[in-house]
Image (cartoon, rainbow, N blue to C red; front, side, top):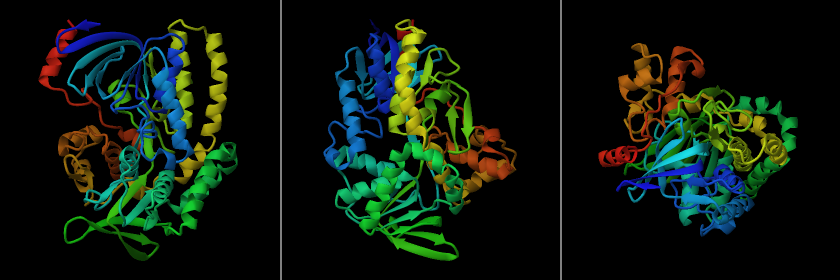
Amino acid sequence: MTDTGHATVEDCDLAVIGTGPAGMAAAVAAAEFGLAVVAIDEQAAPGGQIYRNVLASPVAGTLGPDYRRGAELAAAFNTAQGISRRHDTTVSMITPEGEIVLRRDDGKIVLLRAQAVIIATGAMERPAPFPGWTLPGVMTAGSAQILLKAAAVVPADGVVLAGSGPLLYLVAVQLLDMGVCPGAIIETTPAANYRAAARHWFGALRGAATLLKGLGLITRLKIARVPMISGASGLVADAGSDGTLARLKFRRGAREYSVACRLLLVHQGVVPNTQISRALELPHDWDDAQRCWRPRLGAWGDTTLPGIYVAGDGGGIGGALAAEEQGRLAAFAVACNLGCIDKYERDRRAAVPRRALARHLAARPFLDALYRPGDEAVVPTDETVVCRCEEVTAAELRRGVAEGCLNPNHVKTYARPGMGPCQGRMCGLTVAEVIAAARGLPVAEVGHFHVRQPLKPMTLGEFAALADAMK
């Protein structure tokens, strides 16, 4: 390690970015081969979004066996030898050669040089703008779950959930377990999705445990008599006289409805967090089943860049248990490439994780078809704000297309979507969908925002310290 005053330079065998299920499993598996592993995460403790605060959550006992499974993995991660754990640390820059610029919460800059990198950044909730989604009192279901896991914060009353996807049911049941009964669950799953999903039903039976969990959640909600309204469309969050959320309006068929609520939790599924893989300019493919981009990966999570791997939901949504196995597979590949084991041993060790992975992914085609968001959820109406950072509406995006903007990067220069603090994380997919619909083209032909580094803000002093460290 070299100290340059405000920045240090360090070397390691493997850098694991993210300590969710994929990252923790990868770090533990790699450390067992004697590799020097550095595990990096922005949070103060391991677990990622799915297992957030799992070792210290005040409500861990009420969040179910899936959440408690994360405690076992996090405990193994915390006690494994050979892992340098860098929590409260942000990845600001990364190069194809495995050089990673880390910014710690205390302002210290570290230039980490890794022989191999496993990107395990997981998923993020799909932004699904609709009129009123920026009102005080409207938030995502995942955000509410974070407050619950981290600090046992739950709404007092007047909560309604709306959208599509298994997380809606899970969060509703978790609220029930905390003594809060949701006023209603408004489902926007298109009717055609049920017919499309039926084609995958028999294949999904190999993953029957996943299906049974979902049925169990729905049964709990029905026993608790939580109103569940399906076939909803045209969501509009309406404000009261004080400017905060007062009601949710929606259509069901030809009829219009209004439900009073003080807190609206919305959800339209999750998508891979591809900001780092984009920054590395890795090839990405459009996944039409999940309506999102995913990096192009090999059987071990390997990418087109030597030594760079992606594991877990950042490479395609599969769930926490699948992410664990993908993390282990990537670690085996790294160990093989760095000479710790040969290919025979790599393949022998991979046999059990591969069987488990196939089982965990068996229900995925069924779930993807059932909860694929409809056009209304991803192509909002003109008055809807798409880019919250720059307050750009869907109408402004469409005007950009009419003026000759052909892709998200053209529209960015025209109307500034994606130029705010989130750098397009929250609006990128929607911008591409709006442009594609306006041009009558598939999203795959429209493309996506270019991601420019640094991924997170850095001061000029930090850049100067980094420059000194690299001399």
